[in-house]
Image (tube, rainbow, N blue to C red; front, top):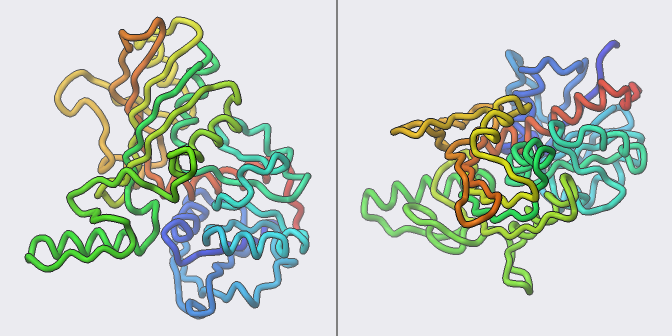
Length: 341
């Protein structure tokens, strides 16, 4: 065997399916890819490139045979299974929030802090950041390197796919009910999502922030710079895929919109679509299915000595989750940090 044995936990979910798709697209060096899910999905078939793989039960898999496990099955699964998986000698890349704030677990966006992958030796775990954080720091990193960001004010416009398949189904059902004049049933969200916006993602904290807003703050500081001041408002919007962010930045040193535009055009993982004309910007619909993070509406903030406004859009299922985890796995391979069983 020349390739690796890869287990994908949560393979039947939105992100799990994208992980399998991207592993195949990018020709990850795997001899064996094992899709894992709960017992009720055992035996069902799932796509992997031009192949079909049978989903296996998580409960019965022997992780001592796997080199790396990519987990996207929710915090409860990660909390229960990651200690067992790492004890078997398998390295874990986790999409949940369980280990993101552990100082001994690297939180990685490959375009931003690839050097942190070396810390996988401490616990055999790498955490994947929150989807809204990933696209944000990809854009902030090159600007921070140039002019040092002091403060960030961010408002997110997050698609329902970030809340899972049930959330996507609820938006579809509510939209259909609205058009046929049926009762619009609210189940997954706290209020109706169809033709509405909900300024509430995750649970409320004592500060008045939601957990989603806190995550953006804590994760950006851990990945980029703990000295940056951040305030966020996270909003769920009635679209299926792609998160958008309106970002206001204050810098220590002067930087113009023109210079920022040139910097971001050269930045890895970024694509600038910014013409001051009708349709000269990117929207969530156009970003869906794409790997890049798009930046539009780059302009100077006249209320600050050195400030910029940006509009950032990315596919939350791909760069915000699945693609980032596969890129992390590629870092492990390139750094010779994965040992074949």
